[in-house]
Image (cartoon, rainbow over all chains, first blue to last red; front, side, top):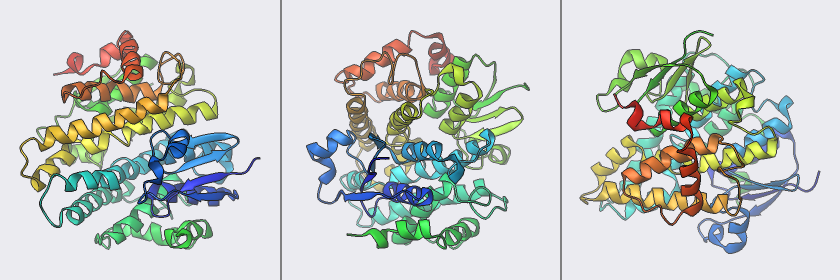
Length: 210
Length: 210
C-alpha cells in the first residue's frame, strides 16, 4: 500500500471521525494540516483535491477521497473485520441511521460557515452560542431516544462502529459550546467507554493540535 | 415479503429520495402521510416508530427503518442489481460523497425546523428566502465542481444512483425557493435526464400530494 495522507484540521469533527477510523484500522498515515481559519481550504491546490473545499481529504490506494462518512464506508469495506460497520444488513442500517442522526442532523447546522452566515442576519450578541446550544442539545436528545434501551457497550452493540465515530466528536463539540449533556446518560456512558480506547485517544483534537 | 409501508410527507426531500429508490426497485408500497405542518411527526405513535420525529420511516421485511440514506443503503444491499450504489468500492465512495455533499451539506441547513429557529433570531423580513438561496446556491456550486468534467449521463456514470436520488429533490427545492440554477449546467442536465424516468416521475411531490 502507498503512503496514506490525511488532509486534516484538528478541530473539525469530520476530520476527527476519520482519524478515529484510521486508528481503529491500525493504518499508518501522514497528516497535512489545513487551517480553516487561514482559508487554506479555499486555495487552488487544495480545491483540486477537494472541490467542495472541506476537510478531511484522504489519499489512500492512489485515490483521493472526500466526505468523512464516505471515507469511513470505504475503510469499512477495506477492512470489514474491524467492525466499523456490522456484518448484518439490518444492523448496518441501524448504525448508519445513528451516524446520520449526528452527521446530518446536528453537525452541518453548527458548521463554522453556517454560523458565520447566521451572524450576518442577526443583531443578537449571543446568537452563536444560543444556536449551538439549541441544535446540539435538541439533536443529542433525539440520538439518546434512538439508542433508547439498547444495552450495548457502544451506540450499537459491544464494539465501536461508525456511529461512535460521529458521537465522540459531537460530544467534544457539545462540551466546547457549554451544552449540558449530563441528562444524556446513554450517550455520555458510550463516550466515556470510547475515551478508554487508544484509537479514540490518539485522534483527540488536543493530541493532534499543531 | 410483507407489506412495505412508507411514512411520508409529500414535500420532504428525504421522503422524496426514498420514494424514488422504492420505484427504481419496483417495490409496491403503501403510503401513510405524516403532515409535518400539523405536527403529526411529534405524536407519540409516530415517535414510537421514529424516535427522531422525522420523515421518512420505512417498514419493510418486518423492520422499521429511519434516516433516508440509511434506508437507501439497505435497499441497495437488498437489490444490488438495481444499481443504487455501484459494485466497485471506490465508485461507491464517489457516489456516497456526492450524495452527502447534498444530503449533509445543503439539505439539513435548509430544513423547516432550522429556518424556523433562524426566524426567532432575526428581524430581517426576507431572512428565510435569503438563507435558502445562499445555502442552496453555494452547496450546488460545490456539487457541480465535484461532478466536474465527468461525462456520465447521471451524477456518476450512466445509470441513476444514490447521488441522483439526492440531487433531484434538492433541485425541486431550489426551484421552490427561486434559486438561479441555470448556471449549473451539469446538474441541471442530470436532473432533466432523471425527469424522463418513470421511477422519478412517480415520486415527484406533485404526484403524491394528498
